[in-house]
Amino acid sequence: MTKIARERLGVSEATALYEKDLFELGEIADGIRRRLHGDKTYFNINRHINPTNVCKDVCKFCAYSASRKNPNPYTMSHDDILRIVDDIVLRDIKEVHIVSAHNPDTGLQWYLDIFRKIKQQHPQLHVKALTAAEVHFLSEQYGKSYDEILDLMVENGVDSMPGGGAEIFDEGVRDYICKGKVTSEQWLEIHRKWHQRGKKSNVTMLFGHVEERKHRIDHMLRIRDLQDETGGFNCFIPLVYQPENNFLNIKEFITANEILKTMAISRIVLDNVPNLKAYWVTSTVNLALVAQEFGANDLDGTIEKESINSAAGAKSANGVNLEEFVHLIKESGFSPVERDSLYNELKVW
Ligand code: SF4
Image 1: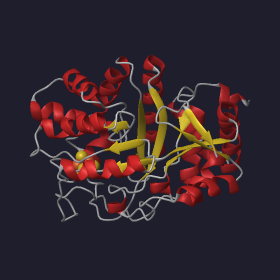
Image 2: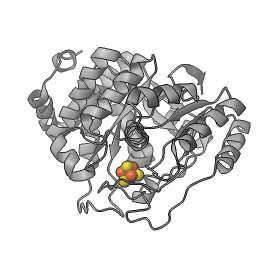
Image 3: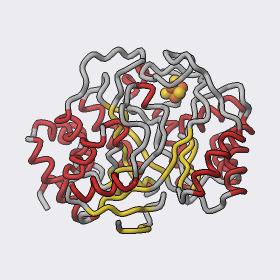
């Protein structure tokens, strides 16, 4: 292992890694990935459901919320959601990933009842639901503490939390792109409390918009600090900003070189987070496959349908065929391993 991979770097040292050659960074990150996971690339067979796009918040980067540039508000009925869930269970899908906008009109029970109904009908299905941003919204909207909301999630069948809503933790950038939403401290506090319940979660980072490299590193270091404390994050998921249909109005798209450097650096910096995901919905499948050689050991899953990033221009947001997915991983020189939502291995394909 190189000296860099063994050291714990601070903000300026880690930011300086961006000056290195892409392939040098890739080699270091690949060494860490192979030490942790060999040539295994994890994925799971999952279905995303986004039950409502009606939102009280006004994030500038958002193309999904009905109050922004998307003129088609919708709120799914529980029966609609349960019909989808019944169908996916028949097809042996093991995880349902439920994330919504912050709809002030449904009532708290609308959010909770759907988890309970899913769990009652399909106890074996893993329910990953409610970002920390949603937890904060429900807490404020209905006058409950974070602890009360988190306890209600557990009682109603939520198994793990997704990593959304983290965006970029730097307060200045956050103020500009999503003022009014959960703050960085609150986001981290909610995940701390979730981990203290013995539960697992993921953590994302939205990059490629107005943030600078140092902000990405600061974001990673705040994650590393909380992970030292709780050990509750399964996976770090860098999300590439999607430029269409929003109010950030970024003209230049981030380069593949910068995306891969960011993946590699996050593998180096986050020495205590076991998995690094290349989320192909925002990076494209092809770049996600390349990212396997830059530290990524997880390609999410087949997903089937995703509404949030597709609204912002993500071209590959409607799922991939399982056989094709497995074939692509093998063709790129890695070993596809189906996992469950908590990274237990289910099948080597
Ligand atoms: S990103 Fe989420 S919270 Fe922000 S406006 Fe969009 S749906 Fe609402």
